[in-house]
Image (cartoon, rainbow over all chains, first blue to last red; front, side, top):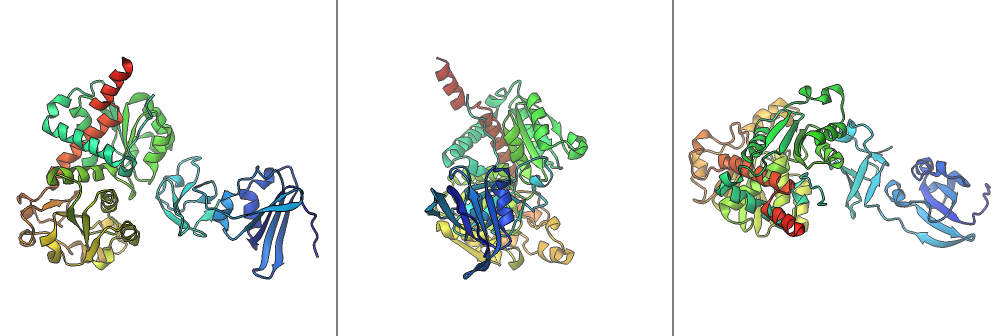
Length: 147
Length: 318
């Protein structure tokens, strides 16, 4: 049994689809944090079979978790303060996502313009559809390549 | 300082703003002479990264008719894009030379990128298969001028409803007005996309989809014809089979109302027989004329040179 110490303040991201934790590590910018981060891959799960978990020791106001909803809206976000879970946060699809996915429309200006940020807006919340800000190409979860 | 405005999509302007724009276009229509010095000393840059005849000439004529001057390029080969310059850099340079820019680009979203970096108003003059807002403004002005109002009519859209960007853009723009019934006339392969019909359903707007034009002709107030575009087909056989699917001729016109109007974004190939051109209901060349008026009105509006803007300026001054 792998044992990882509890955290005083931060987040535990549970029920991450197995294998996706490193993508989330990258998109949350955890590599830039000067604090403890535990990545647990392929942990046993009764519901999912196996899952990934991320434990992040940090100020609970310092991370923008919006992007998680686009990557995997089934993730459970546990907010920890003074060693206890104070909130189980539900994920809300962000109105706009920047620098997370890439538009694959070859006719889009983002395919040739130098250093143009990849920006997508939430076009249909109910059906979880994003569209490229430049060409309006449609993307559902999993359609697009993560940057 | 007033916020810099651009024209990327007709929906960027509210219904009231569009109404003001069309009022101004109709004023220009009635007395073009009185607008002939409104843009003295102003310069329009036409940055056309792909060839276009009507749109570019319409923009240039609009500026010349307002007393301004034009500069620019007519294809990417004659521009710094051939050397690899980005759209962002090009517009920064153009902003130093001109007062307003009309941009056509084969890449979708290019004019939007230009607008985000520009110090002058940018008009999207067509970006690939994405948007062509001044065509939609032209269509709306033509409908309003001929019919007297933007609403309470039945419009048939016929031909390539799958790939035709002008059709999609016009439908989107018309959904903001009330009492409009759409009839989509197309072969099965070129049906209007599902996202359009879903959008109409969600807004409670009525529509029908039919294959035979003759069936619906007597009910139409407007018939918007489109060309089946060869470049959209991978298979030459499909193109040849579908290009002659609808040909509007005198016989079909006999089924139409006496006060029906035929529109077409042009260029036409063979979908409207030339024998229809002399019919008083053929409005597609008049539509080109309205395109000029609306571009003149748009240039004045984006430059803040309408009477309303001038009056506001005077009020602020005193």
